[in-house]
Amino acid sequence: MATTGTRDEGRAHVNGGDLVADALERHGVSTLFTLCGGHISPILVAAKRRGIRVVDVRDEASAVFAADAVSRLTGVPGVAAVTAGPGATNTITAVANAMLAESAAVVLGGAPPTILQGRGALQDINHPALLRSQVKQVFAVRRVRDLAGAVGRAFDAARRGTPGPTFVECPADLLYDEAVVRRWYRAGEPRSGITTADRLRGWYIRRHLDRVFAPGPATPTPDEESEGRSPSARFLSHIALALQRAERPVLLLGSQAVHEVHRLSQLAEAVDRLGVPVYLSGMARGLLPAGHRLLFRHRRTAALKEADLVLLAGVPFDFRLDYGRQISRRATVVAANLNRRALRQNRRPRHAGVCQPGRLVIGLAQHTSAPGNISAWLDALRSREQDREGEITELAARPADGINPLALCRAIDRALDDDSIIVADGGDFVGTAASCIAPRRPLSWLDPGPFGTLGVGGGFALGAKVARPQAEVWILYGDGAAAFSIAEFDTFVRHGLPVIAVVGNDGSWAQIARGQKEMLGDDVGTVLRRTAYHDVAEGYGGVGLELRDPGCVDATLAEAKAIARGGRPVLVNAMIGTSEFRAGSISL
Image 1 (cartoon, one colour):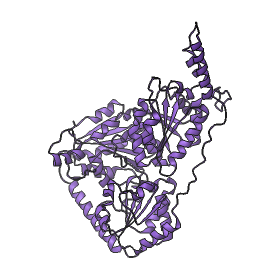
Image 2 (cartoon, rainbow, N blue to C red):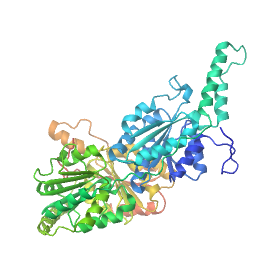
Image 3 (cartoon, rainbow, N blue to C red):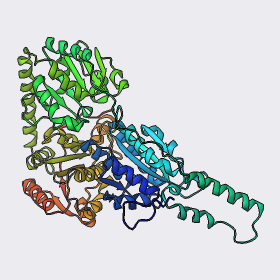
Image 4 (cartoon, one colour):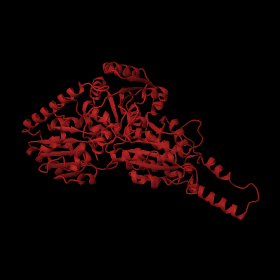
């Protein structure tokens, strides 16, 4: 490797790990999530030297989940580095989750030395073939000088168009010092009796390494993305006209609408100016404060059946809208989405635009005034909202065979700080929480997205606490989901990240069990133990609190908040009872 000197005093050599770390620094990366491995060690060491925080986890999936969360909360792609073979295979679910959630993340993957790939080396698999179907783009680097450019292109690809994850394969012989790599190969040379075959082998290895370390111009790093994604004036005028004619309009805002973090306040003001009833989903939850005159959470399906204009801003026609069937066939449907395919999949809107949905709403508010004839429509929606809130209040007051899950979720809502982030990881308990807990601000609700992945909790909370260290970070765990990532309590402790976890523990995969028993008459495979997750958290160095008494809910949550303020992660293991609140909630 070149000995050109570096800005780091006392460091005589630049290796491939340095080049990768330099590229991360140029792209504003402040934290690198990882699980260590010999293939990627130079990246970790070089990142630390540059002041990039290296946070090591207990499962590679958590590293990618954390990178995903950072991307969603900051607008800068999060980065995870994982070792070869099982290090990469362990990320597949998390990478697929980021892809379907349209979350930009960059995954750096180690690999065996280039000359040994396909020859039975340790942890040798075809990483590009494995990852290609689950990421936007794969970059397989084969020369040291191309490492930085590949990282730059991975960042660009992750952000361009519809955001998503990218993967960069970094073979070990590109990351270590050239002298070290050449010694690796010389170690296998015969010490005596050199044959013609040995000479040919030596010549081949030297020629290969000369190509790997060849000097020359590096592959250029792309400039910052300048792709225009604003809606056209014609598209805006069509929607403005439709909106002025509408008597029962509804606006649905999804995660895409809040991708541009720097426009959030402008977007919230635009929604307010439009004066149209709005339902928020995904990362858009919290854009408007609870109690806002235009914000609705309940009876969305009924509203869509009656609406005469439905504006989908970053919301696809997937299972969450019953593939478009929730919307009346008589309604004028308008859709804005970064993903061209999603615009017309399952249902064709009257007007469709490939653009940034948040920009569409902002532009629309600048082009038109609020419709003046929808007061009766707003009153009807508010009446339904109040009726549903009354039903939830009544259900929360009912006794249960344990703590009433609705009452617990309402207590959590009361306990939340104004600056808080909620990480949702579970089925039935989390679905209940979504109806009862109001995010306090934009970008304060993290759920998996359409992939419905269990196990995001530890990684998402890790990324959230790193991205917003002053925020109060809560994980809402179902007891089934908790087991996937509770080991990250070890990570929270080691890195001083005081998160609060609440496990809704009913000893069941309740969301599955309810439908399975009703339709098939058997709960096989859905029954769990009421595991002592508070003891598990204690074993990893955190604090565990067991909650059995409904009368102690508020006091226990207050204690958990005090423990977290004191700098320690804490888990509340709440023994909840059964509830029919979400009967019939199965999704396919």
